[in-house]
Image 1: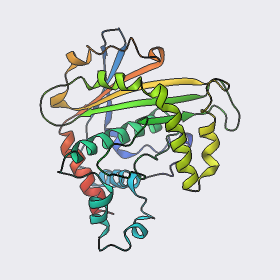
Image 2 (image 1 turned 90 degrees about the vertical axis):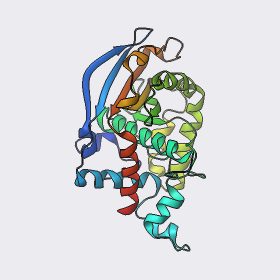
Image 3 (image 1 turned 180 degrees about the horizontal axis):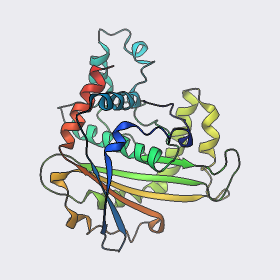
Image 4 (image 1 turned 30 degrees about the vertical axis):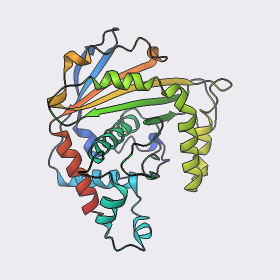
Length: 284
């Protein structure tokens, strides 16, 4: 089920979405060129209609709330399914739509990982405000907030910032994890804009009650907190190379001492992406 964008992680961690039961920590750890550890997870998705339908609803609501879809499509001749497919979702066949789909899918899955498994509050604000459905949202990919005690500032409050890359098509392997690490360095400067974008979204959606949570992290100099940097790479198993992952070098990352590295691979991931978008539209 898609929760309110501002639901605290602590209130939902007990209700793990079914699709995250398919995300398995293999226990394998790879070592990068600069001796950082990379956790290897496998996404063992199954043909379970109940889980897939709940996931599709959760996924769809990132782009368009089920409560808003009829208002938004009014004035057109589109059914809900056609409206989502033609207006809200990235194109399924015309470039760069398919790559945008895989990128959005990967970011949302990592956002689920950060929220439900790492117990952060993760606002879902990046996809519903797209001006061009076939472009990636700007700013940091995933932001997670962890406040030790609501309403009280603590230096142990944590802001998590994750960069996400994916490779789901073809059979040639690329080191998308290294690319995620390189782009993660940009989040040092993108952080302020990304936080402001979340704040603006909450204001626009009449959810200003949650704005203080964002404001807590907007001034790291006068109001210090901990940072949890992350770089994640998702692959179809055919594109996943352990040897290439081990060539990753995070030695120049400004947050290297608190940088988490993960890879997630699974079979036929692009087929899964297509099927999830189709189900999300057809079941609206």
